[in-house]
Length: 621
Image 1 (cartoon, rainbow, N blue to C red):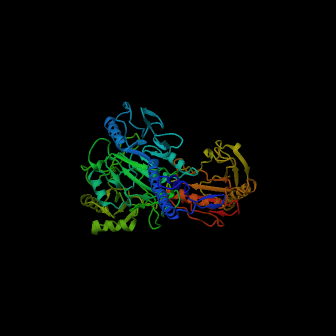
Image 2: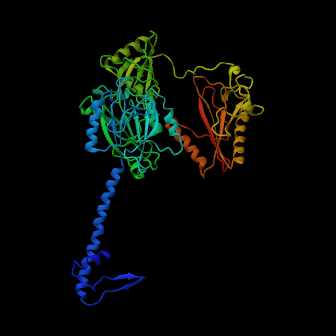
Image 3: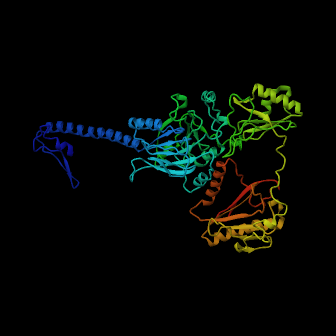
C-alpha cells in the first residue's frame, strides 16, 4: 500500500483519492466519487505491487546462490614439485587471476629438489608435506609436517572465515597422530587428506578397467604399489577428498562411502581420491598435476550435501562390509612395481626407512612351496586352487593357502613339480580377475604351526607385575587379595583408573586356575559396582588383551576405567563406539555371554572388553 501511495501522482490520482489504510484495527475507505477510475488505478497499482516482490525474490535467490558459492573454500592441489618452483608458481598465479581467488595451494609428494633449496615467494598461501609442522620455508610457504591434522583458514581471514581441516600422512611416518585425532570426542572426519604416496589397495572395487589398464601402460600398477600405513590413515580420518602424489599419473577414482549404508549423520560421508602427476613436468592429460576444488568444510556444510552420494559411488576399498568377504589387509612389506626389464615373477621389496632395498627372495634349494603375491583380499583357498588348476592342469599343487592379506602359497608334493610350475607360471603369467600375480619361491611352512613363545619360561625376576620382582612399583598397590591384587597404573587416564593383576605369574588366562580366574573377574565386577555407587552412577569399561608384541606377553592384567554418565543410553553408545573403532582397524568384535567365564585356549590371542552400565549395573562383553 505504501508503494501504491507513492505512485499516485504518476498515475493521475487526485489528492483526495487514497488507498484504504488501517489504523488500530479499523479500515478507512477512500471517497466514493470517481470510483471507477479509482478502482482501475487501484487494481493497476496492486498488480505492480504484487509483481515487485517476485522480482525481488528472484534477485535475492541469485544473491544467496552467489553468497553460497563464495562461502566455499577454493583450493588448488599440485603434484610433486621437486624444485620446479618458478613453473609451478607461475601457473598457479595465472589460474588464481583467471578463476580465483583461491584460498590455498597444497603440494603433495616431494616439494624440494634438495634440502638446501631456496624456495621463492608463492603467489597464494602454500602448504607442503614434510618438515616440522607450521614451519616457514619461504615467503607464503609453510610445511604441514609428516603426520597430523591441521586447520587452514580462508584467505580473506576475519571473524567469518571458514576453517578447513587438513590431515597429512607420509609413508615413512607413523599414523598414530591420526588415530589419536580420530578418537577424539566429536571427530567428524577431515575435509582433505594429503599423502606423499597412494594407499595400498585403492584399486579394490574400482569399476574402471579402462583407467586401470591405462595406468598400467604408464608404469603404475595400483594393485602392487602404495603404502599400508596410508590405507590405515584413510580409514582413521575419513576424508572427503584425498590427494596423493609420487606416481606421476593422474587418476580420479570413483567416489566411495566410508560407511556400509548410505550415511545419515555427519560422521560418515563420501570420499573422492585424486592422484596427481609431477608438477610442471608434462602437458600430457594423463599426467595432470594441478587440480582445483571448492570445499564446504564439514562443520559448515548442509547435512544433505554431506550424505549425498554421486553416481557410481561404491563401498570403501579399505573396509569390507559384507560378512562373506574378508577385511582388506595388505602385505606387511610393500611390493613395488617390477620394471619391464625384470622377468615376470621377480619380486623386489621397497626400501624401508633409511635402510637400503631388501633382497629378493632366495631359494635354499629344498623348498616345495611357491609364494603368490598380489592376490585380491576376497580370494580364499578354493579360489586360489581353482586359478592354479586352470593355469597348471595336471601339475596343479596339492594344497593352496590364501592368507586373505594379499598373498598366498602353493604347496607341491615334490621339488621338481614346484620348479616346473614356477617356470611355467613365470613364462605364461598368473592372473586373478584380470589382476597379474607375482610368483616366486616360498618357505615350506604351514599356517597352523603355533607361534613361537616370545617370553621366558620364568620371567618373574624381570616382570613389572610380579610382587617379588625388584622392578615392581609396589607403592602403587592399593589392595591384595587371595589370588589377585589391585593397583594404580603409572600413567592413569583418570584418577580412579585401576589395574587388576593376578598374584601368580601368568601370561594368559589359560594359565590361571579356577580360583584365580574367578577372583580376577570378580574384582573387576566389584570395582565397577564401587564406581557406580561412589561416582554418581558412573559407567565402567574393563579390558584386557593377549597379543604378540616385541616385548612379549609377560603378565596378564585387566584395566578398568570409570566413565562419567552423560545421558540415557551411554553404555550402549560405548559398545557401539568400540565396534566402530574395531571396524576402522579391520577386525570384528563378537558379543559374548558375560554370565559365562571367558576361557580362551592357550595359543589364542584376543582382546576382550566388559562395559558396565551405571544405570542398571548390567554388564556387556
